[in-house]
Structure formats: structure tokens, C-alpha cells
Image 1: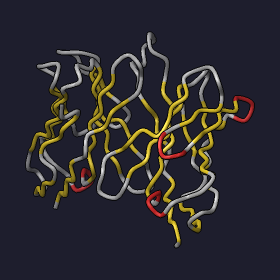
Image 2: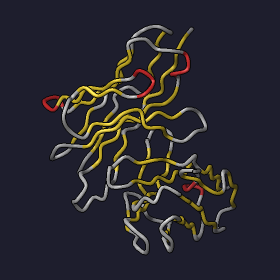
Image 3: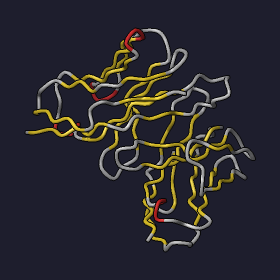
Length: 117
Length: 111
């Protein structure tokens, strides 16, 4: 069974500082990996995704993530955090199309990001 | 082009009451999903559908039923609501490219 672990429940950074949110997954084959962001009272917005190819993927709002197969990780990074980045971030792993999974996602528990001015 | 919409946005139920949550999409996606979100647990899949007329159980299906009579709509029903079903419910849709697009959510409080 696939699983996703986000070790950090809550992270606090100062505005302008760099950010790294950790995500570790368990999956038997090459996973489809996603990062979503959720602002308070809102739905989930896709930040970026990895399906195949270049292991460093760029997303919206200046975020990037790196797929490291040897470490089963897909950490999210941003070089300089803005106050508007305060939100909850979810890592998710999905299964390949064409199988019996039909694109189902398994989510991590989420990491709440607080940004100090 | 509204994307994914959910009705209602908020609802309060008494234990034992029933209700139906509606998810509608105008993206012509085949796959639709219902999740529930609880603090510290991320999102968990309740039921999903791979096309009109089909439904399947997800990770936490007990106490819920679903129907997909039309491609654009996916209904989630609670026949006899329980306080444990207090949650935020999200609908999502996807095409074959695997990216799921989420609705704004429905907050449900069961007293």
C-alpha cells in the first residue's frame, strides 16, 4: 500500500528566508507525486507535479521540488518566502494511469507554514 | 467555466438526519472523487468514480453512499449522519493526465 509522510506538522520561518518542506513516500513503482497548497477556508491548489523526466520540477509561485528515488523523497523548496505563502501544504502520491488505481491519490498529513514578518 | 463546484458550502445536521452533497464539474473529466479532511489526517478518499454510472469504494467508505448518474455530477450521501462525520468534504476531478482539480469544499457539522 502506498503512503506519504510529512514529518513536520508546523514550520515557522521569517519572511525572506528559505523554505524546505519534507515529504517521504512509500510506493512499489515509480510514483506520480504532487504538492498542493491550501489557504484557510479554501480548496486545494496544485503547486507542482512530477510524473517522469527531470527530477527537479518547477511550480507556481516560485516553488520547486526535487524527486529523489534513492531517498523516497519529494521535498518542496522556495528560496525566499513571502507572507502570502502562509498556508497548509500537502504532499500526495498517485498511481499511474492504465492500471486499476484510476488516479487515486494518497495524501500526507499536511504541514502548516507560518511566516513571521 | 466554473471548474469544480460544491453545494452546499456549509451545513449543520442533527444525528440521524440525512443529506446529499453535490459536486458538479464542467471540465469533461472522467474521474471524480470524494475526500474528507480532518485535522492532522490530511485528505482521505471516501468514494470515487471512473465514469458515468460507475462508483467504487475508497479508504473510508463506511456511512456514505455515492451516485454518478451524469458525467458532470457526483453525489455523496449520508443516510444517517453521525458526529464522527463532522468534517470538511472535498470533491475532485481528473482527466487522464492524473492531475486532480479540487472544489472549494463543504463544511459539515453533525450535532
